[in-house]
Amino acid sequence: MQRKYIVELTNEERLLIFQTVDGKTTPKTIRRRCNVLLLADTAVGKPIIQEEIALRCGISDVCVFQTIKDYCLNGLEYVLRRREHKNPPRKPIVTGEDEARIIALACGEPPKGRSRWTVRLLTERIIELEIVPTIGRESVRTVLKKHNLSLI
Image (tube, rainbow, N blue to C red; front, side, top):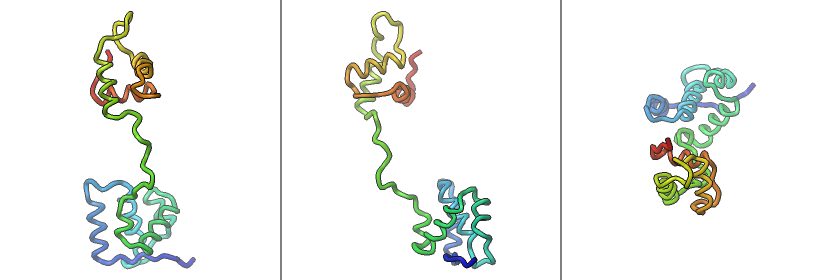
């Protein structure tokens, strides 16, 4: 079958790819894209088929096709950049000010009749005091853990 997009890396591009793969802080997705381009390169010989590239790199056929297509249409810099989300992930449930109030509450006196705070009690009290409109126990536990606080 005739290939629609053909990868022919120059020596400079190949060198940049090797440097990127060897970088200590290079993300896994960028390394995979680099490996796809190296395996699909026609300048060093006959490339293997895309299904084989997908198997060797541990990614899907579509990912291999998109990487090759992006390289052919947009260039190497486009392929090696990190993707930015159009819409960022969810906003944090608890802001810094809210965290401070939760920590102050957890470090304070426990409710009457209790010897210590529990995550469940803290969650209920946070909602009562309207520090945060709604919050789950896991979010409260995460805030406490982030600041190395133990309720024991």
